[in-house]
Amino acid sequence: MLNTAGLRLDQAPPLTVPFAFFLGAPPFAVAAGLLLAWQGEGALAARWTPAALALAHLIALGFLSQILCGALLQLPPVLAGAPVPRVVPVGRAAQALLATGTALLCVGLALGWGLALGVGALGAAAGLTLLAGAVAVALSRGRGSVDTRRAMGLGLGALAVTVVLGLMLSAALLGWVRLPGLPGWVDLHLGWGLLGWAGLILMGVGYQVVPMFHVTPAYPGWLRSWSAPLAAGGLVAATVLTLAGQAQRATWGLGLVAACFAVFALTTLDRQRRRERPILDATLLHWRLAMACVLAAVLLWFTGGRAETIGVLLLVGVGVGLPSGMLFKIMPFLSWFHLQQRQLAARRFDLRIPHMHAFIPERRARIHWGLHLVALGLLVAATLAPGRGLAPLAGLALALSAGYLGLLLIGCYLRYRALSRRF
Amino acid sequence: MAQVLDVRTLPPPEPLERVLDALTALPNGGRLWVLHRREPFPLYDMLQTMGYSWRVRGREGHFEILIWDSGAPPTRAELSWNPPC
Figure (cartoon, rainbow over the protein chains, first blue to last red):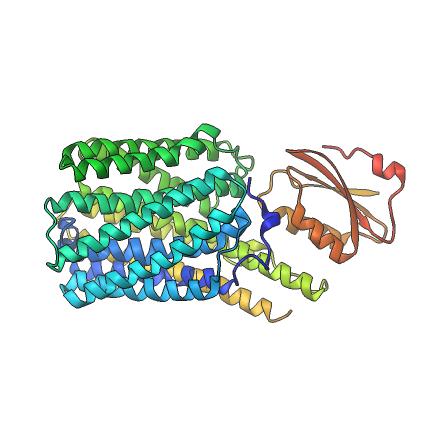
């Protein structure tokens, strides 16, 4: 169980460190939407087009990884009672490297600029490695929920593999090394990044935040113990088989991973159905939509559906939707908690702190979910029915949805800043 | 008369928010019983700083916490009262 007693200002990082990651993420999703609106149908025609590669990295690195990094700096002190060492300089440096590196990498991928691609890949890799190393130290010193720490540790390991594979692929694109069977290596990079790094971290966080924020029964012990190691095992098997030149059989390993996430998604939907308060808030709507996307992606994958559709379901349906929904809880919660601590320290009990829900009004969060749903629907339709001119519209809808998310998050931070000046 | 506040089905930080609201409205010498599904450790730090005392009983899934102004301790009868669940 999450021990909020461990959430203390002397252990948690200054609020601005995770918030900088959270606030820095939406512009990358806006950029992805605008790129799609500009490039149109061609961007979604195949997963190998320069625009598709840039789109995938704007969302996977710029949006999703940035939010995961911010959350990882915040979570070890909360979940494991262990602060991340030198959290302020590590956080600032990692974010600068990741954001700049991602921007350069995507420019390099979209426009074929070798120097930007190489420098960008190195920058993003350095930022992620720095952050993963610091968080791994914190987790190794921590205590508390073993299942969550195991999933996070495996997620960090998956990130390391993703970074190495990404650097290898960049070197191959620049013509520095030869990688026979390139598509197989790309599948591994994508699998370790999306299913390993993002999937395992989201799974580990889900075990804690779903029962906590939606007052549901806990996840079954067998699932918490086995799902993350089994999924990681599937990725290892796929990698070994690819290295052995048996790329076809590597799909068996990925099938195991897909099955693990399908069971996780079904269990999450079941737990949420059994929640104690029958309130359907924006976070829960995002969770449900994301879990439905996981199940749809798994179904499509097993039935030989289009890779582009599966990519949109996982990258946008899960990778954009789920972190957005969680931020609607996490940012107000942290704002409220830090203000509460400041009030205690100043002993100003005459001043009232607004309730957590006042930081991001529920009605606006629901409007964002509606915009996200429209964007996701258009994106999926654009991949299923190419040639209908839906891609630019889908791009604009994605940019609008992410832009609105950014405004809501900035509003939350400005409200916190205005209130914190009273103490 | 003791006031009873049931926060068992609320997600964090709503239990803490509701307790702080209730304490603000509590008359001098008043008692507040809180029904909670877990032990609210962060609340204890706040109560101490704000000049309140408390007594907790129960088990995981159901805790009963009696809170009072430190200057007006409860009687034995008030301590042994069973709040309606």
